[in-house]
Image 1 (cartoon, rainbow, N blue to C red):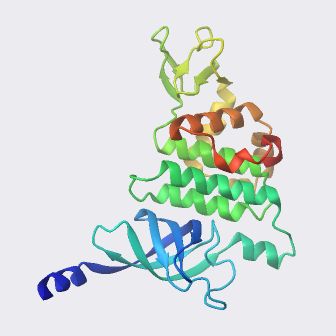
Image 2 (tube, rainbow, N blue to C red):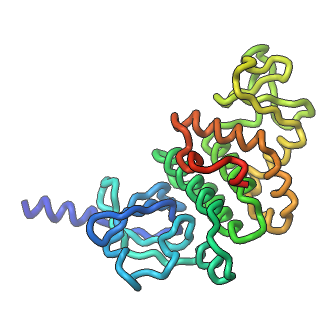
Image 3 (cartoon, rainbow, N blue to C red):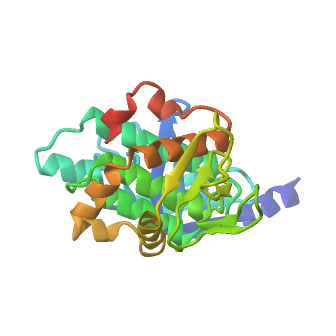
Length: 274
């Protein structure tokens, strides 16, 4: 028995890496369950002991979309790890409070949307510096003059593209011709992620979204260069926020993938998210 305990103890390792808080909920007694996205480890579930005690952590530290360095103790292949510390480098809540700006209801809807989609779509995927960078950009842009619908569109588009659940080019299921890419003609997506020629298209009752070549070029740049450029070019974000058809398509595509409606939007009217 002593050997068994020693073997278990040796399997425990301390890990430190950049991470973004996704969600948290109360745990036993004074603890919290916290979900992080680690740059190297991907989705992480951590138990934070005594996290609810006053003055234990800086305000905003474990709020969703806070960014910092996470230290945790990993125990073998256990799904839950032990929280050691989180050195905060950025929190939109701290920044908003310092600027004297309230946390608006639309802010909370947006944060819930990002957390819900990450927790639903990222399990089983390894850590990805690209996804971590997009989460960090979304967090920082929350405090700038960027419409929340543009941030939501940017996040969903880049996430679905990164995971291979959307593609800018493909083969039309009806005629077999190549479609999409950055060519000059329109392209049509259905909710299952298929690309069609406009002349073919999915059935008349199917949800569809048609994108021009110019819009596809903008979305391709968004997927490769990230969202940070919006701080220098806010007009690009405002233009994207007006793409209501794109927003509705991304919501339906995401709901199709996770097999249920997005809970973060059930209590909100879609236009109010923008």
